[in-house]
Amino acid sequence: MRILVTGASGLLGMNFSMQVKTEHSISAVVNSHGLRSLDFDSIPVDLLAKNVIPQLIDKTEPDWILHCAAIAGIDRSDNQEELSQKLNAEIPGVLSLEAKKRNIRLLHISTDAVFDGKKGNYSEEDPTNPMSVYAKTKLAGERAVLEANSDALVARVVFYGWSLFGNRSLSEFFINNLLKGKQVKGFTNLQFCPLQVNHLADILLEMMKKNLSGIYHAVSSESLSKYDFGVKLAQKFALDAGLIAPVKNNRENRSLNLTLNTDKLTKELGHAMPNIQIGIEHLFEQFNTGYLDKIERMRF
Ligand SMILES: NC(=O)c1ccc[n+]([C@@H]2O[C@H](COP(=O)([O-])OP(=O)(O)OC[C@H]3O[C@@H](n4cnc5c(N)ncnc54)[C@H](OP(=O)(O)O)[C@@H]3O)[C@@H](O)[C@H]2O)c1
Image 1 (tube, protein in one colour):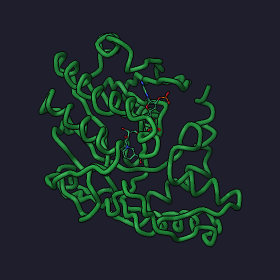
Image 2 (image 1 turned 90 degrees about the vertical axis):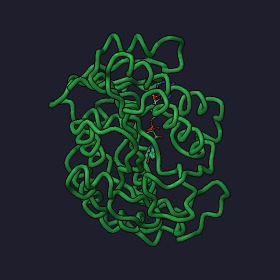
Image 3 (image 1 turned 45 degrees about the vertical axis):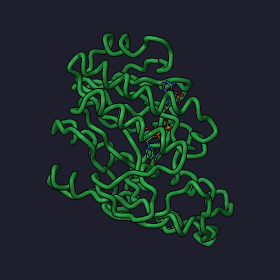
C-alpha cells in the first residue's frame, strides 16, 4: 500500500512510519520538525496553508491517508484555541472530502477524550460530551470527517511510546523524571486504557487491510489509573516508584474515567487488543535494543 502519513514527526505518525516502512510505501508529512529516513520521503507541509491538501494528495497518490497531525493534548490545545479549531476541527473535513473525490481511503485519528468520563467502559454508540477545547475540536474533527464521507474510518485512541524529542508521551514523562531522581505526580483518579504506540501501529494497519469504515475504539484491552501506569513503568525500568506522589486531578476540564470498550474492534479483527503488561515489556525491550538511537538518527 501507499500510505500518506500526516503528523509523521509526532509520536504516533513517526512510530507508524518506522514500523511499516519496509512493507509499505510511506509519504511522511512533517511541519516544524524535520524527520530524516532513508526508507521514506519526508515532506514538509503546513496543512493550514492555502490549497496544499489537494496538491499533497495528487503528488503522493496514496491508497490510504493516516491523519495524525493535530494540536494534541489538553493543555496545548486550550492554549491555542483558534489553531486547534482550524487544525483539529476543520482540516480533517477537508482531507476527508479531497480523499473521497479521489477514491482514497482515510483513517482519521481521534481521541478517548470525546467522552466526559462520568461512566467509563464507553462503546462507540455512547453519547459524547467533550470537556476541553482539545476534546471539543477533536470531536468536531471526527464529525467533519464522517460528514464529508461516511465511509471514512475513525480510530479513537490513547497511546504511549518513544517520541522524536523524548517529550510527547506520558511514559516518557515518568521515565525521564524518575531516571533523574525527580519527584512527579501520578493521578489516581484518571483511568485510561493506554496502548503502546507500536502495538497501535499494528492495529491501525490491520484496520486498513480489513478496509473498515466508521468509528472504532483502538485502545488497550485493560485500564488503569495514571498513577498505577507510572508505578508499573517504574517497576519494569527498575526506577524508584516512591518518587511518584499519588494525587487527585481536580481540574474542571478533565474526564476522569476514560476507559473505552473495544468489543467492536476485537470482533472485527478476531483478536483482543494488547494489554498493559505486554505494552510496557515492549517499551522496555526497545529501550534496551537501540530504538532510541534509531529515533535520534531521524531528527534534524
Ligand atoms: N498522544 C496520545 O496519547 C493521544 C491520545 C488521544 C488521541 N491522540 C491523537 O493522536 C494523533 C497523534 O498524536 P501525537 O501524540 O502523535 O501528536 P504529536 O506528537 O503532538 O504530533 C503532532 C503532529 O502534528 C503535526 N502538525 C502540527 N501542526 C501542523 C500543521 N499546521 N501542519 C502539518 N502538521 C502539523 C506536528 O508536526 P511538527 O511537529 O513537525 O510541527 C506533529 O507531527 C492526534 O490526532 C492526537 O489528537 C493522541
